[in-house]
Image (cartoon, rainbow, N blue to C red):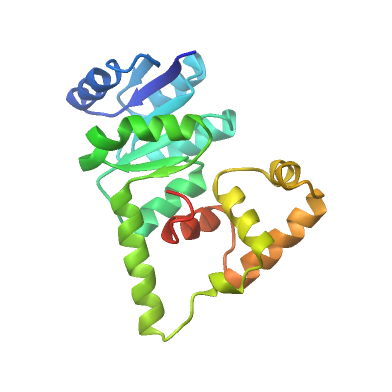
Length: 215
């Protein structure tokens, strides 16, 4: 079956370019376009796409808020944010809103198809440049404060749980994969978050990106 895609960008030329690029793919179907955030939410509700390619800087309703509204209405939808910004604050906001991918515009031509395929499989995707920058910043942060990376404090099972959570799995899904109880997963999740000083799922994903646990 084709991957159903909605293109949301306020520049018609950009949407045209994205459409041209994606229409070369045999397993992709463009089901709609939107030129502002409110229209994107409405069209997503009407067409039920699998994936939304969402510009972060949208008029009337920005891409982050539009993403949050879409995910609230349809938690299964895969939103990939297109952005000029590579700093962590934007990425964290996108993850908190429920985005499954974050792609820098200058790498979209190279990475967009891979991002769509990855998110459609249920695996988050981030521009390689973002991963590289965040890893460098994280290592610099540790060096400046003479800190050790807490990842080595995790047990093998906690590392497994960390990766599965970062890949977007629910506690119930993690429990089924590891053949343990949901209570056990909850316990591992609490312990790993305490050890790594993480506070929510978005920060778990961000940490996993920094550590290249997920791509």
